[in-house]
Image (cartoon, rainbow, N blue to C red; front, side, top):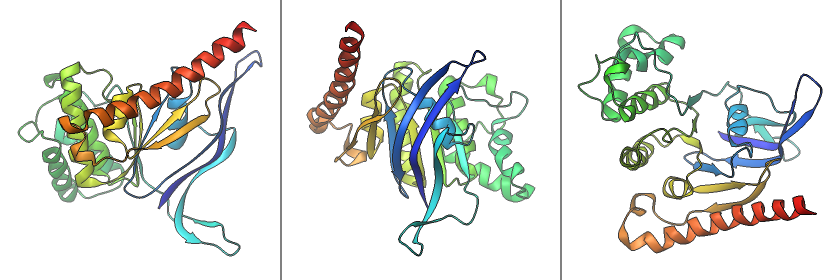
Length: 269
């Protein structure tokens, strides 16, 4: 299945009837086994778009759906016949403090009605996958920030989602832990290969992780450009690719800066 974001817009209306247009005319498709990152200035609607994709809010215009990849009569895409599973990882990991790591990872499986023995085995495998073997019976307060984030990622992956949505999942971590977690995310993605939509303020992180980077404009957020990262994901941290990584980062930063300068000029008129 492919995720299709078709001409999506979002407008917020306050209690006095004032409107704020957050997003306009967003067109984006995410294919199977594709990792797409979204970057842009603060307030451009990155998290709003993610929340709509996750089903936490509805678009004002356009639609978001999963396509089966088949073609209907007339050439349009066929909608998925089953409800897709979407898993979300937020910046602040919402682990249940009264549950152990293993019980937290089991939670989504419980909601899906998976039997106790099966969900325990599935949860154990994902705890091991994220490098938390030996901490199954630990509670969230006993874990470091990076370990809590790993537990949250394991919980999301355990339901075997059709789409993994991540909103600034590493931004609260210190610099060293963040780099380590970036490397871990690459390894996890190589194992699971879920469709992933990833929001971040960190341009270098987006280039390091993603197949494509979508650059949003200032509010109302529109897609300025989508860049494909033509480097093997596993080799992007190697010294030999630093110049190429830097070129991608500078290109993206240039787009954001140009958009900001345009806004300043318009404001001065």
